[in-house]
Image (tube, rainbow, N blue to C red; front, top):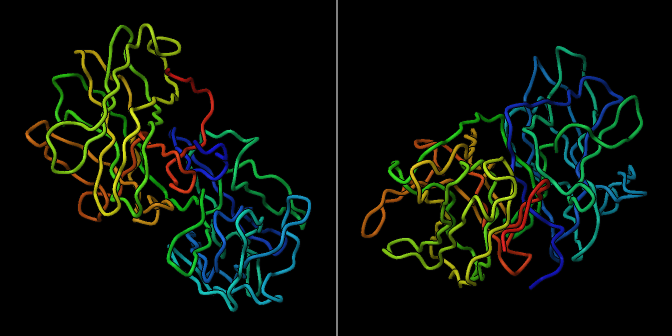
Length: 353
C-alpha cells in the first residue's frame, strides 16, 4: 500500500458557492502543485467566467518561495502565455515547456497583464462548490493576491491546471464549471438501483476500496459493489450495516469502505456503485452536473457518474457526454497506487473496517 496520499481528487458537496473576481491589477490567483511524475508540462487549462470585455491575463508556471508564488516564471522566465479576453475552458500553450521532477513544487498563476480592468471588465477565476478536504495534507493548495500581497484563499481552488506532454493533467486538479446540485434518495425497490461512478482504466490498477459521501437512513443497510462492464456478478461487494457500522447512525458523513483487492485492467470499464439493500436505505447521495468533460477529469482518465438498472448484466448509463450530462457522484474508487488518481481529500469522515 502506498503511504503517500497527498496528491488526490476532491469531493465537492453542498449548494453554496463563491468566486474570486480578478477585477484589479493588484489581484491574482494561484494553485500550488506537487509534480506527480517527472515529465514536461506544455500547457495550462484555464476555466474562467467573463464579465464584459476582460483584459489580458498572464497564465504561467512559477517557482515557489515560502509556500507562495515567487514571481519568477520557470523555463528561464518563459513559462507563461497571455490570454486576451478569456472565457470558458481554454487550453493555453506555454511559451516554453517546463521540465519537472517528481515531487517538485510549483505554482500555476493567473495575473493581470494589460488592458482595462474593473468590476465590469474582468473574469471570475475560482467559482467553486464546498470541498471536503484534509487541509493540512492538501495538494494542491490555493492562494490569492489581494492589494498586491499573496495570502491563503478562503474560497475554492482556481480552475487552472497544468497539462503534461502526454496529455495527462496534474494530480489534484480542480477544473469544474459552475454546477447544479441534485440529491438522490432511493431504496431497494428504486430504479435505477445502482448509482455511483465509472471509469475506463488508462492503466492497470488494483482497487482496494471506495470513498463515499452520503446520508444513509437510520436502521438501514447498503452495499458498495464493483462491476466490470458486461458482467453479471460484481467483482467485489461490501455491505454496510448503518446501525452498527456508520458513525452517527443516519447522519451525513464521509467514509472509506474497503473492498477485496481487485485488479482493474487497462482499457476495461468498471463501475463502483451503491445498492440499497433495505426499503429505507439512502436519504441523500449528492451528484453534481457540470458543463463540460473537463470538470470530471482526473489523472487516470475521466471518472464519470454512472447509474445501472439491475439485469444480467446490468444496463449502465454513463454521464460523461453533453447528451446525458457531465455528472459526478460522491462515490470515488481508491487504488493502492497513489498515481491512480482516485483518492479524494476528505474530512469529518469515518473508517468502516
